[in-house]
Image (cartoon, rainbow, N blue to C red; front, side, top):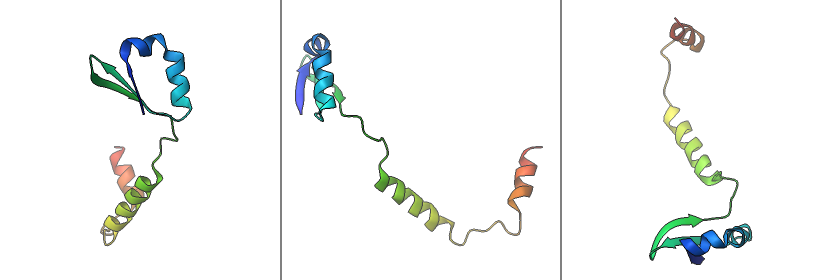
Length: 80
C-alpha cells in the first residue's frame, strides 16, 4: 500500500492511476489524515456474500405459505 499526499496525488494523478491499475492500493492524505483510498476495480460482486444471502433467504422461506392465496390474485389486487 502506498501513501501519498493530496497535493502530490493531484500533480501525479496519472502515475497514481498506473499504480492502482497495477494492483496497488493507494491512500491519499491531507495534513497527515487519510481522506481517500484508491483500490483496483474488481468485479464489484462478492460471490461469497451473495451465496450467504441466497442461503439465508431460502432458509427463511421454509414453512412460509400464502394461506391458499395465489400470487396472480395478489398482484392484481395491488394494481387496483
